[in-house]
Image (tube, rainbow, N blue to C red; front, side, top):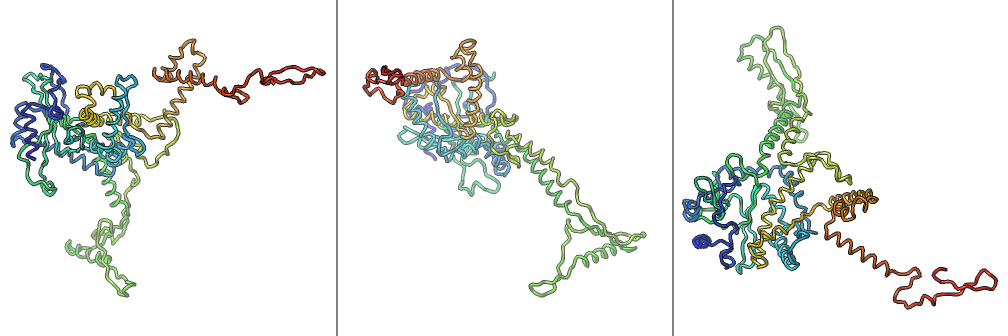
Length: 556
């Protein structure tokens, strides 16, 4: 532990960042030039400290509190995790994970492609593709761990991955996921009194605290933690791949999970369900009410007489067929049993009546309302959890509900937030292997496109229907081509072909035309057969008497 702290201290004193020490290079050109002044940005959940405070926090035991998450933020993360363990929320999270990534052993759930008009050379594209294969299969092991990593990101609302560099500093040896309770993201914008900051001096550091907090039951002590660290452990920005939900608390400003919106609806739903169960258990059966005539007895004697009557009716002599004995079995009074009430004489004797059961026991509108609010808070269509599930049909793909459309957009936003850590790991691996330079990544990133695998059957149906609609439209305007529309316009705007696809189509048509000239002739001969056409003339007797004409065999 002390070696790690000393190493980080050395990096900080020499004012050298992670990449400069890692690659043994000269200080690279910063992203912003000095004196790039602007105003403070909106709160993104990162704790902002002054320059001097960050330095003192890194190298003094008194600053360990800076690395520790506030108690409110810790409690929020624990509440998200508790909520994720319930049956209803776990089912909803599983639906989101399955919709976000179609993880299959047959193909990659995330594919890397390049823009059609990219300026990257083929060799660079192939090198990036090879590195991506290692990142996907070896570092992330996405087929086996992808769903687990994405679930951590969704539940906690943030994801920290430490990029462990190999000893030779030429590749990433391992990706270590850090608990969100043990890591805090801190930045120093060095703002002046007017709120202006210099972007060239902005700095981000990740503080690691192996003991986030000691619970009252000493759960963390039992897990193996004994004492708090004597020095603070800090990681440079380049050593951690980080992303979050993009949502912040409206008052305290820390990062919140998408599950934060579901806490109140879920608690309301469970409270309504519990109330319904209690009401049904208590009021479902009908019960008898005994009004026992106690005459003019005093209150104490009347109550004693009532208890004696209850005892005589409650005690039953039961014959036990297994032992052959007669046993006195006492039935204990409970809320579901009969009700006994004393009654004064006033001309009314002992009476037994029936207390009706509760009404509207089958009505669940209140519970369904709370359940619908709960699923809405998670942005999931309620129809996906309906008891009467509709089978997966081959209907029109265009007939999609508004809720499903919003859910699809929500999944796309989650993918865009999660792909940040994947791009960060890919960038670091490319730089470590010497394929690109750090300053080249921003330009290369614009050339990359991420393709997420969808459900194969649904994608085939969707593509088939889209193609059918395009072909029907082309058929309708076929008579208008070269009159109102050009052929290229139809291919670009209706068939949605790119310039490269149009050129490829023209080339294939030319090849098909040349192949038609080289096909077999109708008599089965080929060009390799040196058969003289003139020699294939035969004499066919004419219908005229004794005359003969010469006719081409091919015309016969």
